[in-house]
Image (tube, rainbow, N blue to C red; front, side):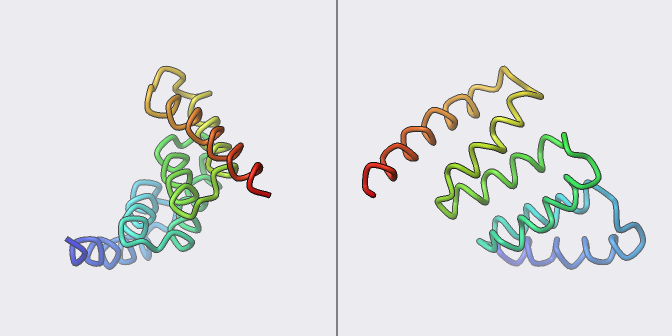
Amino acid sequence: MLDQYNEAIIWADKLLEIDPQYKSVLLCKANSLRRLGQYKEAIVWAEKVLNIDPKHKLSLYCKGECLQEQNQYSEALIFYEKFLKIQPNLQYFKDSKSNFKFKIKMNVQKL
């Protein structure tokens, strides 16, 4: 499975040579990097899409997931809230938002 993500990155790079602002390909690269556990690099690529389209839902999701995987719950919450402003009825993000608020509270109490 990991080989498929690496291959997707190779193809994305080739397509981005032709059109460096192709949002779907930028997101494909971001998601492939995320699946490979390269969260910081994935955020860089998700941000490239968000620079072109700040309301790109899937890029907001990708960035939020990367931040969540790095236990940066406060930061992830920001991107989930942005997503919910665009698509307010998605239950997964409502649940994640509640879960993050709890984790943030627990981390503050540890200090």
